[in-house]
Length: 122
Image 1 (tube, one colour):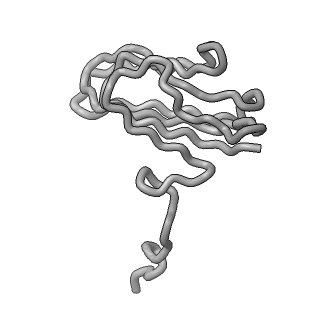
Image 2 (cartoon, helix red, strand yellow; image 1 turned 90 degrees about the horizontal axis):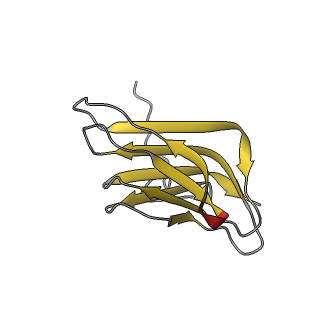
Image 3 (cartoon, one colour; image 1 turned 120 degrees about the vertical axis):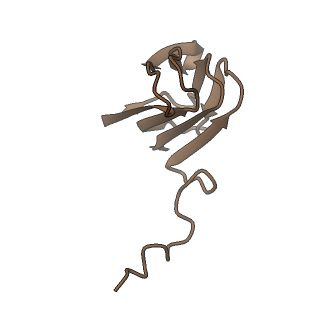
């Protein structure tokens, strides 16, 4: 007997339905200091994970994640020539804590990338 509840949940977090814990961005151009997540006033971001997928099928350059003052806190490097899209996933055992009102931005030479940030604000 199939599990009838598997698809019964509505409004699960996804690209079409983000949540306060998941921020999704689909970027069509190569971003330079493109702001991905700005916390609510007086709050800070606690980042628990990052996922990037690139639709390019070649060796692609690094993608840099930045905090205040364009200071780089993580560099994602891709290096594949396979016929499938490239992906990068980074999780943090302890959340990366940002300063109050500090945003997360990205700079990359990539186009057609999907970036998902997981975390929360407090």
